[in-house]
Every structure is written in C-alpha cells, then in structure tokens.
Length: 174
Length: 174
Length: 174
Image (cartoon, rainbow over the protein chains, first blue to last red):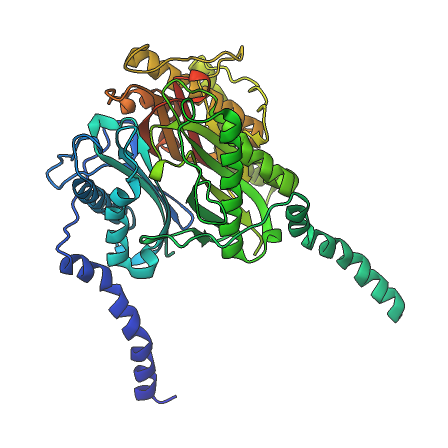
C-alpha cells in the first residue's frame, strides 16, 4: 500500500475516535459544569471500586465544590425544583469521583444502574421528578450511553440530613 | 457413522434442549400469568440495561396490564396478603420488561439479586412476608434458577404511593 | 536444574502464598471473632449467589451465633455505640454466609460494594457512624481489600425490627 493512502486511511479511522475523545469534557464546558476534587471519605470506605469493566460508586450527596451539602426533606423543607437541583448536584459529585477513578470520562461506555434516594415525608410521592435532575444531566452529557436503569425512592433519613443520595454502577472501557 | 445412528444421537442431544426451551412459556401459561408490554418510562431512564451476561432491571411497581398500579402503605391501608399479591404483580411487571430486553425468558440462567421495597409504617416489620409474593413467583417459574439473594425492607414512601417496588439483577445466557 | 535448587525456588514461591492463605482465619482469631452457621432462610431465597467472580450477599441482620438479633430504632431505642456493635455483628453474619458460599475467606479479592441500612427515626442523621461498625471490621480483617464503596442510609423499618441490615458484593478469586 502506498504511504499517502495508508495515512489517509489511518486519519479517517482515527478522526471520529479523537472527535469522540474530546466530547465529554467539551460537553461539560458547554453545560457550564465544573467537576471538583470530592472530599475524602472520613471512614473506612472509598468513593469508587472497579471490578472488571464495572465501577461501583459509593452513595454520594449533593456536595458542592466548597464541600457544603444541600440538606432538607422533600415534602416539608424543599420544593421539587430544589430537589431536582440537588439531584443534579449529586450527579456532578458522582462524576467528579468517577473521573478520579478512571481518569477520563470519555471511557464511560454506559451508565448502567442508578439507585436514587430522596429524603422525604411519608406523604411525598414525587421521587422520580426529583431524581430526574440526575438522569437529565447524565443524558445531556453522555447521550444514549447516559440512559440507565434506575429506582427513585423515598428515605426516612439520610446522613447529615442531605436531601438526596445517589449511587450508581458504570460500565467503562478497558 | 451410519446416518440413522447420527440422527438418533442428534435427536437425543437436542430433545432435552428443546424441552427446556419451551419450559418458561409453558410454566407461565400453567400459572395463568400473562406478561404485558410495560408502559414506557416517562423520563430519561430505561427499564433494563444489559452489561455482559447481567441484566439490571430498574425498580418496578405492581403495574397491571392496563397500566394501573396497586397503591397503599402496609401496616395501615393493606393486609399482608394484599402486599403479597402486589409483590407478585411486581414480579410479573419485571418479567415483562426482562422479556422485552432479552426476547426469550428461557435465556434466564439465574435470578441473582433482588432488592424488595415495601411502602409501610414505622411499626410494620413483615416486609419478608410481602416480598415472598415475588420470590415464590420466581421459584414457581424458574425452579432453582429463580432462587435469589434478596433484601426485603421498609420504605417511608414510594413513587405515586405504590405499595411495593422491586429491582433485580438477572444472569442470562450469551 | 539441580533438584535442591528447584525445591528452594518452589518453597520460596509457595511460602508467601501459604502465609497469606492462613491470614484471614488467623486475623479472625486475633480479633476474637467466631463465624457461625447462619440460620437457613425461611423463604424462597438464598443467602448468597455467585455469578462470575462476584458473590452477591442477601441483606443480613445483626444475627448472633444463637440465632437472636439486635432489634431497635436508632434515635429512639439505641445509642450510636449500640448501633455500631449491631453493624459489626451484621458483618460477622455476612462473613459467615460468605464462608458458607466460597469455603475459604482467603479467596476474597475485594469487598466491592456495601449497602448499609439503619432502622431509625426521621431525625437521626448519623447512619455513617453506625455502619462504621461494619466497615471497620472489614478493614481490620482484610486490610485494603476490605475497603469498599458504600451507602449508609436510614430506613423507616426493617424485618422483625432489626436495628441494621447490610448487603454486599464481594469479588473472589477463581
């Protein structure tokens, strides 16, 4: 094979890969989302464990870059909109930890499974509308790869009174 | 090898496979259970995600074929028997989604892990008796393959007031 | 190769493996922890299911070797210290079931994911301090292999009023 042709083929093959490679970071920038270094766990556990191609993320709360958290109970202290924002913030915290584990969010193959917990009263029944703040974020960043199997449920109480806690399983490239 | 012998051997080998192949659908019929097309999720998530040989099912409620759900709190609005039926109905909804994902329920190798959530009062402590409605269904359909590791726990509230929500992980054939 | 040299190499290679092999049982002895045969589930589920290199443990409670359980609600009936002890006891129950499944706890490669549930009042927010009883135990036995991704959350009610329920996923050697 002649050299120029070979180079052409190589470039053609690699271009989409490179384009995709920069996608997630560009998307985050477009959406105005800044990841942060999540605070270290204070106890004998870690933020993420990888086994094979799956990364298990610990339950995260709506932690902001300054380390503070959104607290409160849905159905009493907060509106659904505020809950939605808390769930979105929880997504940002989870992605921050995920990036810490895998180095590059472009390695994400699929957000597989999500367990979304909402701190709420016994009468509150709109957990899905709250956890949508997380799910919408994932799909706006990862597209179809961001579509996950999920549960969105009510909890009597969460650590330090945080409004939302979410854990997830992510499939990543080798 | 002579042809008749070869055919005999082939038929002998294939017969059990075929017999097993029709087993789950036959069993469902025997039990009078009809699967249905589950309603599409209204948000940015999906009913099931497969990764490798594992299928992760989203949290499902006691949805009937007409799309309605059993609602109520155990310990207040419902008897254990009604909860048991709701858990069984949730199992039917889960299998409907699973069939939508893998096409053929005979591909099920094992119901691996189940998280069973019961909408209840703080005093209600019979979550296992409720979730048995799901577990008994799985074993009556799949036999030993239906025996799973599970948790059966109480929740302060579930989406739209459903009585039971269950999620599960299923190992399937290639 | 001369025989004595071969034997020397073999012994050198095997010694660390043997040393490690006896580690977990020795550690359990040092810590004064005795595993026990966990009571059989009373319904259509099992204590553990293995798929590939992962073992999924069912939700376990703070069961003692005599079969009795620690019951009560945090924030009302129990101190954090008592909750911590219940979480530790739950860890012992889980390891008892894990040993029943894999035969030898030295096969543990990693405690991957833990879901820690605390029976509590709506005002109780110290679930992490309770579940630390479990996490500290795992790290004291398995070292870094015992460090897991976890959630520690509040539940309105648990089966038979148990104070703590924990489920976990463990990666094991082939």
